[in-house]
Image 1 (tube, rainbow, N blue to C red):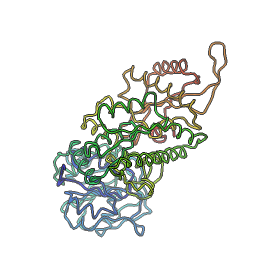
Image 2: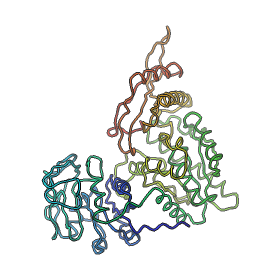
Image 3: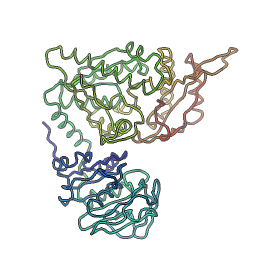
Image 4: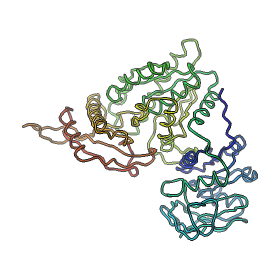
Amino acid sequence: MTQIAHPDSILIIDFGSQVTQLIARRIREAGVYCEIHPFQNAAAAFEKMQPKGVIFSGGPASVTAEGSPRAPQAVFESGVPILGICYGQQTLCTQLGGVVEGGHAAEFGRADLEVKAASPLFDGFWEVGGRYPVWMSHGDRVTRLPEGFEVIATSENAPFAIAADERRRYYTTMFHPEVVHTPDGAKLLSNFVHRIVGLKSDWTMSAYRAEMIRKIREQVGSERVICGLSGGVDSSVAAVLIHEAIGDQLTCIFVDHGLMRMNEADEVVKMFRDHYNIPLVHVDASDLFLTELAGVSDPEAKRKTIGRLFIEVFEAEAAKIAADGKGAPKFLAQGTLYPDVIESVSFSGGPSVTIKSHHNVGGLPERMNMKLVEPLRELFKDEVRALGRELGIPDSFIGRHPFPGPGLAIRCPGGITPEKLDILRQADAIYLDEIRKSGQYDKIWQAFAVLLPVQTVGVMGDGRTYEFVCALRAVTSVDGMTADFYQFDMNFLGKTATRIINEVRGINRVVYDVTSKPPGTIEWE
């Protein structure tokens, strides 16, 4: 068994912020190993990890409310450096004898920070007397600091924008350094882990790979695992990583739900059987899925129907696999990523807004008696790609655009029929073909066609047509959390639209989607 010790680590205590994972992202970018643990489990995590430093995240609660989250006392007693961010600042100050109040002017969005005193926290990029942009998101604020703290930076509505106890190495910010809207935030976090905590940049994707292999082996033991293989980057990387950890204890199940892109099912089967020699069960369940989805137009109902059917198919296949006499699979592996988790449920298990349900998030019915293995659950898409390269998966595969679990079902708003899906497949294939031929594929995060439940009048030759509208979508992004539309040349769009209309029976109009995320999502449903 591969054993990786992480004596030089950072514990991030999650108080429920929707951007907590971005803290981890910045720490990893600084080459330092870190783990996120919800505040409910933080005491146990702190004892187990023995981290060299701790970061308190933001969160939606008010520290003035009864029963609001707190950090474990053991963290303060240990003497390790602490960085408290937003809610983290407020609970740290409260727990050390300061005062936090509501009812003052709130700050949301961009603010200007004025530096009042020097500190190793921003040494090298912020100067005393300078003003610098940061991103705020708070209603409450600190009104009295604990003993030993001093103000080292202020903003208009945050008189304690940065407050620190340099002697104890406690640092607190009212703003969020982890988000891109704080331009120097990554440098600040880097200074905390390097200059203040004193850690080296010695954590790599190779180390993450080894650590995950250790964790998978520890979790699974000698039991068998089935992996839900979609053919996308996420499930593929998860499958290869798990196979490396436990070998033939893993069986992959590829469910062809009839909602794949053109020729995709054949490509997936060929790659995993021929290239990786991973045991693969190919289940053609297209009739089952399309029958159940007939007449379903609500997007959440579609996702939940697809999620339910996936689980039912897995359950049936698990029973078949168990019949070989080698024992029933006890675990289901999935390529769930952090953006999936954060859109579906709070990472900390606390309250959050469900933006859309993801079919592979949220666990399994108790009747399956199976546990989840999700080795990518704390990674963003670009980190998954880096891990895939580390595992030796070809760039041609790693570089593929994300493809949603529910497949073309959510790119066909309204009711789904086999005929509509065929039309969409053809249009999508032409669109991606043109993107590849123009050399733009790798510049785009995700590109796809959508078949709208709208028909418009057209004219072809001397005849009148009344056919569907096809919408084209392409976005740029780093991690899927935010995205902007890709600015194609109009000649490209014109050429692509002409091909689609000429070659695909059933489409007579093409439009281009210029919505960013937010306010939109990347997918249409």
